[in-house]
Length: 221
Image (cartoon, rainbow, N blue to C red; front, side, top):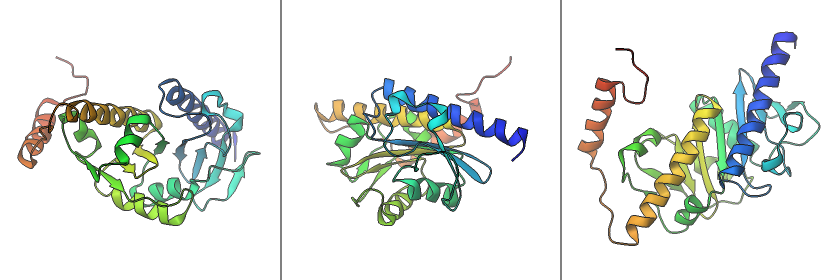
């Protein structure tokens, strides 16, 4: 693979392990539930099955190609490998985060869609669809979630959890945290009354304002 390739894969493994530990510290994953991956060209560094994400180490992270063949690592990849690879193939993502975050999972039990109740959820595409329940680790689950992700960077998974993707793992992780925040916000508001949601026109105005002000990006005066 060469020294440069080895160094890049080492960095990807380090990042997958680091973000796995962060997600655990944030209460987004529990025990061995949840999985994380990052893509580097035609290779994917991904958490293996059976490890505690709170204790993930770089040397435990498995490397596969885009066909799912293990090219490095002693442990079998997560049972949700097809789901991660499907996101890379269809959406050309750079990283994928799948969690069983408490509030996202709770809302997946009762909602068909998380409404856009705050403009920050536009980072995820606005409304967040709930993919229908399918058995974990199956092609049927991967297909359902990939469809729910169309035009979005996040999806809830009915009676299961949540998935986010991004250009890199830091972005995918931040989106997982944003999704959990949005789910918590909706739950708190719904306990009081029917939450107001942003209309299509208001969401379009948000997109225009982001472009106009370069919102969320550092700007020099």
